[in-house]
Amino acid sequence: MRIAVLKETAAGESRVAASPETVKKFIALGASVAVEAGAGLSAAIADADYTAAGAEVCKDPAKGADIMLGVQGPDVAALKGANKGAWIVAGHDPFGQRARIDAYAKAGFEALAMEFMPRITRAQSMDILSSQSNLSGYKAVIEAANAYGRAFPMMMTAAGTVSAAKCFVMGVGVAGLQAIATARRLGAQVSATDVRSATKEQIMSLGAKPVFVENVAGIEGEGAGGYATEMSAEYQAAQAELVSSHIARQDIVITTALIPGRAAPRLVSDAQLASMKPGSVVFDLAVAQGGNVEGSKADEVVIRHGVKIIGWSNTPAHLAADASALFSRNLYNFLSAFWDQDAGRPVLDDEIGNAVRLTLGGKVVHERLLG
Image (cartoon, rainbow, N blue to C red; front, side, top):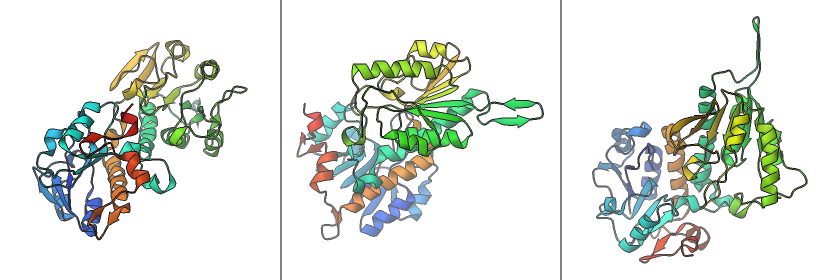
């Protein structure tokens, strides 16, 4: 069983899909590991570190490979020489990169989309969305604080008192919860909102103030698969009114709302931006999927009405070393959980296999891609 670790080629992608730690663990399972030369350099991992862990460092790791690991799905041209039926285990962006998925099917590869991992208890350690979103929520607050130009905590000095910054987090998933925790650690006054009423207790447990629409039904628990879903027009109108009155008093706003497979919902309008104080900062974590904030642009700092709007297309890549370490553990946890010692390779069960498998036997097979 040969496992190949490919160097990422997407613009701005600095992560890598395996670490020396996970290379050692794969070898302990009985696999051989080949790492493309230079694959880990942007994540502060030298080729020598992979060699010391027991991997072969080479220019063509896919040759003879049975499993290929990537952060983002590689182009088919990079997989020349891989065994027919080989697995491609990565974050594939199936809706945005459909042509690539079709090419995998045509080439006879089995593509496994890690972002489709079901949010069930036994798959928590395999969930790349959670591990990467956690870092994104942290980084969003750090960058917002850097751009803010004022202090986050209240400071009492002989020259007078500096008031604490007010930070509003919109969307309380994994990224939102980490954003709340980080802003609290920096000393800000933090409030947060979400369409799921069940998140009120999570917000309060982190010492933040919940801001919720009253008398209009939201989502009582989780949406499908643990994600939020689209709300009624009545709820959206009530939410917009509530946010408009609250957002005008905020210094920092972090938006995190995403719906898998759809454009990001619009949470902050131009009129709401205009109501904020000059010098305020908004970090849009959903900018790569259209953005939660009107006027946000990926990888640019936009100033509207004196408010700075920040949004990166790949926020985890700005923490490449830690993001790679967590991502590579997700991949190892996934493959090792299904490792069959007799077969000398992982054998997926139906529940998780059907959830992540995009292609098989020359065809696209995932139900979400067949409509």
